[in-house]
Image 1 (tube, one colour):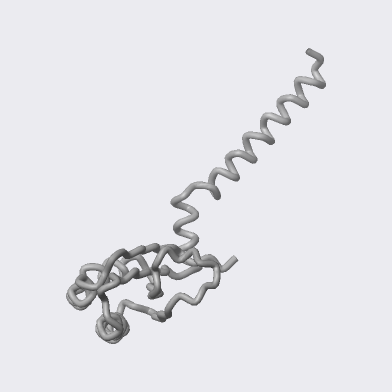
Image 2 (cartoon, rainbow, N blue to C red):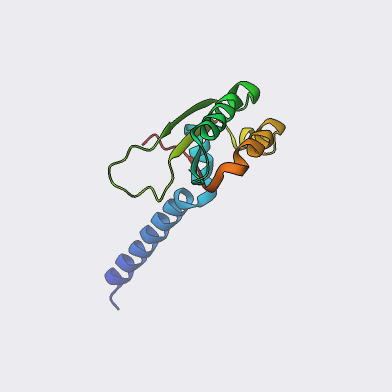
Length: 141
């Protein structure tokens, strides 16, 4: 191999390794998670499908009990809820969505076993057919 080709090959290898090393730092999940935590908030999304036997009054009690949680658990940064009105028909029977925001995983860790959250579960339990919960770090991009 001619010296010029060796030099070009060596140069390309060095550039490739540098790029891989640089990109690896930013693709690692722990680095991404740390960045997400600093630049975003933790969303906690809860969707309910109620039993057919649940009356409007039963569902209202669940709504009221969930809506009382932010005043009882200070780690809840913000809260909203609503009922499904999507025309797509893809709700799979889930009718109610509750959207909580936490500033940290530690705040969520206080909320989950909190006695008032557990008490809410007692109100909900007899009327619940299914639940779907998703948590994510919001992206500001």
